[in-house]
Image 1 (cartoon, rainbow, N blue to C red):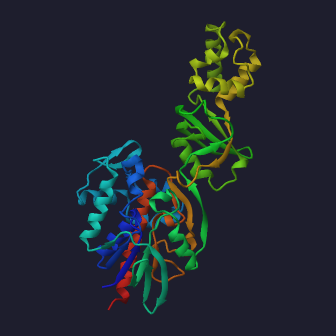
Image 2 (image 1 turned 90 degrees about the vertical axis):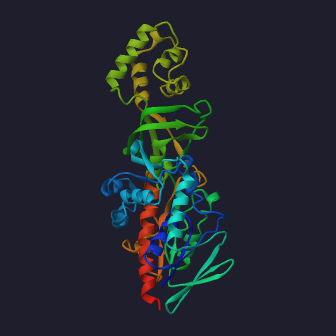
Length: 414
């Protein structure tokens, strides 16, 4: 029986351990935290959006980086297989808006328990509170995994230590260090699916939620992102679903070259919006503009919009010139927001960057540089949008790595 050591007891590691164990390997799982799946507990606001109920081709369209690399793993273990596994291990799931899949219980802890139960059912030996210090050199067919408590000789090892996001859960870059020590190139890591710090004072706008706006980004005059949906103003700038998606697209670009714009009324063309303004201004001709604008916008947004259009908020409606009205329509369709920086890893849902995919087999997840070493999950340079896609990537790559690690180990077992 081949010996496999899995480093990391998160989503990818648990799946890798289960897959390797189900393929007949003798599996040891090493987790440095006091419990398994620490990051799983906080996903989906504690409910765990564990996958997205869509076919593989649609799934891969939601992958930001590494889509081609992930094709084999996702087709081999698509979301429907993950859903079947949950039900097989007595954890029923439900599908919500956007095909997001959650446990029926709404408890993220049930996902971890299900994965742990799966591992135990195939004899995985789980060690908590044990920190891997080094991956030893290859000696004949075996390699030592050295921890702060012991040494584990194995035929193959799976590195599933996560990225750098939410470091409080233990994602502190251990796997990236192991990969570098084994000769791998690391694509610089940046936060993804995270809020954006913006220029200016946002205290007055803090807490305003916009449900149906279009957010677009320009770089050098060219639109590089444009989507409609929900967003939120915060004390530091902007956040919410639209912004998280945007962050995944611009996190490797120089933000000083990017300007963001909000179309606050995407359902109305400029001509329709102008007609609406004329009507409001006529009906309330003796009122100040800051009050008239409340018919169109949340109260706290009225002053910033008028300021961007360079119009006095105390000006009477009947005194607004045609040129000023045109400027106001333009700003309502192009309200500018200047990004300064992304929020940090402590708030990022996932890490963008990681082990360079060029030196990893997309079929087996095995390193092309270190025999018998496999990688899975967020430690790799793969990431996707929100909606359960990143956890499914962890499950699909974990399963591919676990099965291949067991087969590799079996070739050398006595």
